[in-house]
Image 1 (tube, rainbow over the protein chains, first blue to last red):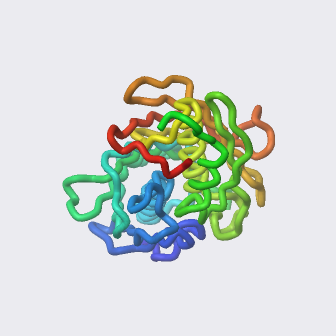
Image 2: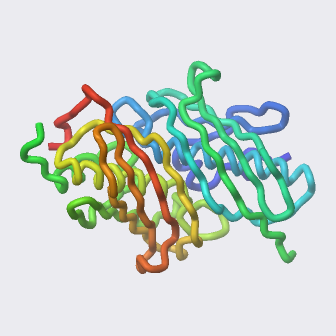
Length: 135
Length: 148
């Protein structure tokens, strides 16, 4: 099991992203909605939303890789973010699902939500390359 | 509303506030349908604890912002827009302790949608860190003069 610190990068910590809890071992992350995440007044910046989604994607992947005892380097290939509705300046939560975990690559789907989990604010699809470490 | 739009003033305004202000994005240049911004390197924005490379989150923020400016420049006015979809294709990691430059071009504008493509690079536009493609929607009735 990945510890809380391992899944939060310096960038994520600096943006205020933290582990909120977990479901079935998959971390749920959140960010507070302070001024540093603001785009249009009163709402999140798309970049801050993407940062949360991406961090949640890597967090879930780390947990899945650790569960298999794999030591691999994660290299991003691409990420597509769909912005479904504006996210207001309030806590925003995100959780990922590993759609595919292969030897060389993984596909991850991520969702973020606020009050109503059935109405996500944004979703993302990520493809990552898994490079087996030499050591 | 359509008169007197100054992209540089608009950029100065939006880059000073909120998320863009926190990232310290800098204005570099603007043309008929493009805008270029710079993201200075910063220790607390790294994506991996053991490598001094900017995380991709701030790069997405940079490209989203450059896209917005490119669209307003092409529209010749400041109008509330919302990102519908943004795709980033990572080509290689940015160089250690290096700033990243983001250039976005609005290559098509319709009444309700704006299509953008762009590159993020760390010095050589021919050797990009990432390519992006994005679609924005204009929000009717939310035209704003904030940027003027």
